[in-house]
Amino acid sequence: MKVFPTGDTYRREAHPYVSGMDVYGSHSLFQLLNRTTTETGGDCLASWLSQPATKRVIIEIQQAVRELTPDLE
Image 1 (cartoon, rainbow, N blue to C red):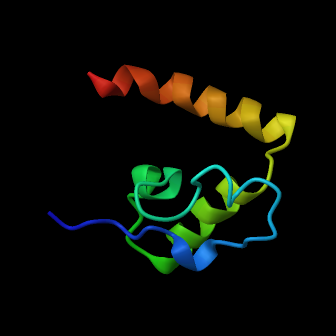
Image 2 (image 1 turned 90 degrees about the vertical axis):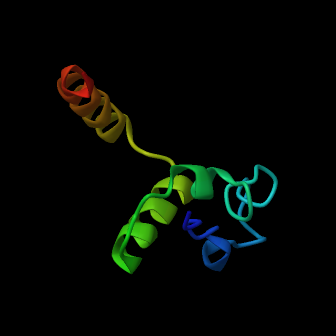
């Protein structure tokens, strides 16, 4: 089984929460969520994890999840 990248390249120790919450590194949130296969995809995921989303973006993501949920079955 191929292990997905840990995201260590995105780690910034001065970030207010990234270093204290296992966002990047081995067994991190990034590694758990990361199923990207391109550098651009990894960059996008890292960006999402490193900065807060606006209320509008959160609502759009929630709507997309509602729309895709029936396709799980």
